[in-house]
Image (cartoon, rainbow, N blue to C red):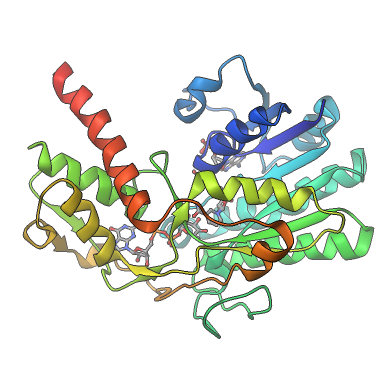
Length: 324
Ligand code: NAP
Ligand code: F7E
């Protein structure tokens, strides 16, 4: 039986990846950091099916112990401080988790078993002020936030350990991917939740930042399959994972409000508080290499994604309203 260790299993991607690997008959271990309250909402349905290991990306020895005690064939490093605005307010902490945390995990692999295959969650935020459009594996990076800068470090340390120590270590440069399990502060989920709250009479308006910003949005459930495919190849290589389509925040809001029968213009207010010190204006990925080598392609379209997220928030908030 193949064994996988996932850091960030309590996050959006970690929960979908655990679902996916269990469907492939893996034994799944997930690293969870110690907290005074349980934060297992996204993996509640996996209780008894995955094994939780306590460790922290900030703590080298806890990572070595986690790798030693589980002896996985594959490690997926999904843990990070992943919310871009927080990376300005907690810049050094973001560097500790999102950048140096990667080295700590690579060192744990090197010391326990250098045959373990390693996946690093790199990000389209590394392209930042884009140097060409669409972005490919060869596009130079120009990050625009402490988060993006930390991810560039994580990306290159992965490449460097592959080249220095011959590790099977790969980086997936994933463009934005969303789902009903997305954190509520990210713009897509903020919009799906906000539109539904307004439709149910639970809120009067939705305050957003830059509506002109463009993102290449896909579905997280599709993207975790690409992570796995990268670790099944003969040779370790990096891949861009994207849909090849880009939409504005305004278009996302329009589609979400439309799905609940409302005109977004009446309810969305622009609030400068949500503008960023430096913005990534437009991202558009070219997934041609992933299509050719991994035979991967996204299954869920932009409109299907919006509808899926709104429908899930509708079901959740209707239940909550009924309980009141
Ligand atoms: P997420 O929902 O924010 O989840 C982040 C996970 O990291 C959580 O499980 C969190 O645990 C864990 N974590 C944070 N700090 C930790 C620490 N010190 N020790 C152990 N665990 C820690 O993020 P996501 O959307 O699933 O993204 C997964 C990864 O892909 C991240 O690395 C993100 O930067 C990257 N990425 C995401 C996207 C995207 O569009 N979603 C695109 C490209 C790259 P707690 O529950 O304890 O907070
Ligand atoms: O912002 C604009 C905002 O926070 C998207 C992370 O998973 O994907 C994510 O990073 C855009 C930005 O995601 C609001 O200015 C407007 O231009 O949903 P987001 P992100 O910053 O693209 C990448 C690939 C990652 O790797 C990250 O970990 O939407 N925007 N109004 C807003 N954004 C937020 N959050 N809230 C607003 O009210």
